Image 1 (cartoon, rainbow, N blue to C red):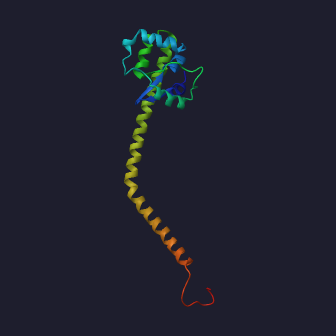
Image 2: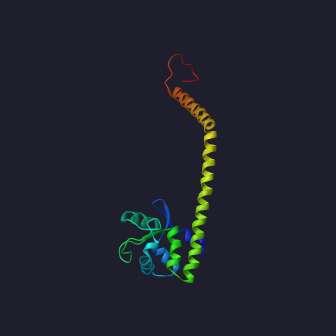
Image 3: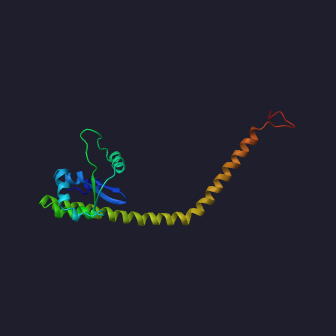
Length: 172
């Protein structure tokens, strides 16, 4: 199973990385209805920090992002979102070779994304550090450029004024 394919199905909702029930069902090659029934039969395994149902507004916002159809042929119920721990718990509920294989691939995708985020955090901190270090020097350069631009503007204005006083034939 391709890591990139799984990563495109991981969303951030309520500050958590989650996967939707319909997309998990597609990966596990089961119907969404059957996945949700298996979860409901084992509801004790899925506390609120493992799984939650999206609100109408969350679903509307997410639907715009993932370009899901609205109206006929769409979902009748608000989808469930599974956190990384919830996805791990699904492997115990869906007991098949495909579920185990898919679950391993999904866990790898979550781990990869977490490592990627940590790497980006380090890079962002280093860039901010460099920006703060050299910001004063760049401000001095910007001030000098602005001064020169203003000086040019003042000279242009002075040239456009109607000259008064003694005029020689060369300048008219």
